[in-house]
Amino acid sequence: MSFKEIKELRKAGKLDEALEMANQALEAEPENIWNKRAAAWVYYDYLKKFSQPDSFDAFKENLIKIKDLALPEDEKMVFDNSAWQIGSMVFGLQKEEPVNYGKINELSDIVKEFHFTNPSEAYTFIYKAFHKGYQNWSNYLAFADWWNFENFRSEDYLKEEFKDKKIMSIAEQAYIAYSKKLLEGEPVDSFGQERAIDKDKIREFLPKLDKIVDEHPEYQYPPYFKAKLLLALGEDENILSSFLPFAKQKRNDFWVWEVMAEIFPNDQEIQFACYCKALSLKTPEDFLVKLRQTFAGMLVERQMYNEAKTEIQKVITTREKEGWKLPNQITQWTEQDWYKSATPKENNKDLYSQYVKKAEEILFQDIPEEIIAVEFVNENKNILNFVKNKQKFGFFNYSGYLDKPQIGDFLKVRFNGHEQDGFHKILSAKKAASNLTSDAIRDFEGTLKVISPQNFGFVKEVFIEPKFVQDNNLTDGQTLTGIAILSFNKKKNEWGWKAIEIE
Image (cartoon, rainbow, N blue to C red; front, side, top):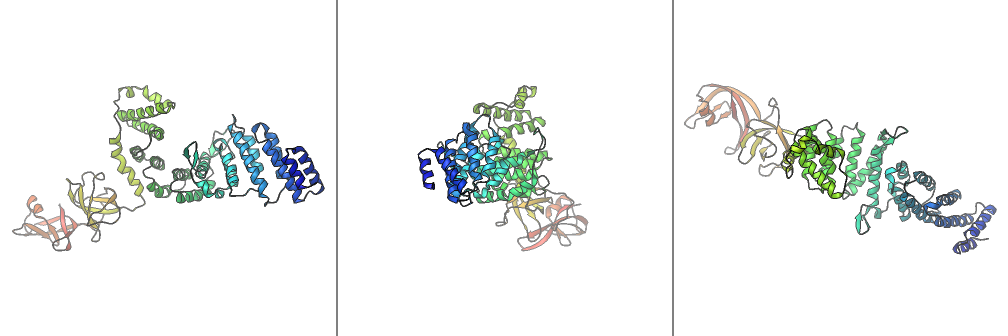
């Protein structure tokens, strides 16, 4: 008996005879590697023969026999060839109704003892097969941990074509699937009604997800799931700071703002602003149905019925177009009196625009605010001059940030980059408390000295403009108290103080 004879019987389709000869050889010399190989290839041929779900038991029996041969790890060929048959069987099982996950679990346990070449095309095929039904497979995470995402090939990170359409790479699908299962959690009761997330497992996975986010910025969804996982950790006080770097990169994706709203569960104003920002972006309507429905609920709570009806009608239009069922909440709203009497608008863009700046400010919370003082306001151009100290001063456009700023107001401002010829770009601006202290504002008291005929004056080094003298009927020698602001005199090219308020 020889390896060659057994092979010839196999090729002739005489598997039973080949198996009998292989078993005789094994009984004679059970540790002979050639005898083991001969038997393994016979069992492999049986795998091919029984690779359909209706022959599952026979397939599993031969798979176990290959495993029990205890072939050395370097015997890759029979394992790699078996991978294609295993994958075919699993794909077949996934198509059955209902899917028998018990059988999939049995195969998963067996293949974990096989020595596949990894990475390899066959090994990726194994993953694809078991990945197919991950949503309802309770053992998916354990399988993925064994398979190890580091074994994806470079090709696995590229989009694939299916029926003339580009589909997401299997690697991106894998990281998304793993994230979803982590977020789903494990059942903590026998009925599966209560679930608990494994925070340690999330922390272990996040660096791997970070790597994908960094190395594949073209992937849309991994950053989203990173944010969701950070939120799921709960006790992390730096969720926002962790989320901000790629929120800035993806600021034009609606889901960024949906997640941002979740980061502020107790601040309804910020949540409202985030939804406005999300809906202000160009996004296919079929992506927005859930977002619009949630936002409509916010509008109903605020009794903004015309705006709520506008959102609800957009949801209805999209769902009907896509052939999707209307949620019960939408149906209930349409039956209420407020809905019937409300007048919908063409869109809510005007409403969104009122809150966009408030939402965008969140992106810059990692940039420190600076306290500045308003020195001059040009209401016609929405420009104000400011001064922080002798090193930082200039002007900026406050449109969309401030409502009627006044000279002497303290502002909290986040600046965007360096100034250009005195002009500053800003990221955020809001009025600050009037009781703050600043290098740019000081109280003054003293005797007024009026300079004629120009009719301006000084209280010590504080300049009093002619308008102040005239409007307040000030006279030479009068005792004055007031507030002064640091000001740069371009003509004299020097710093000084000028009054902005007389008390």
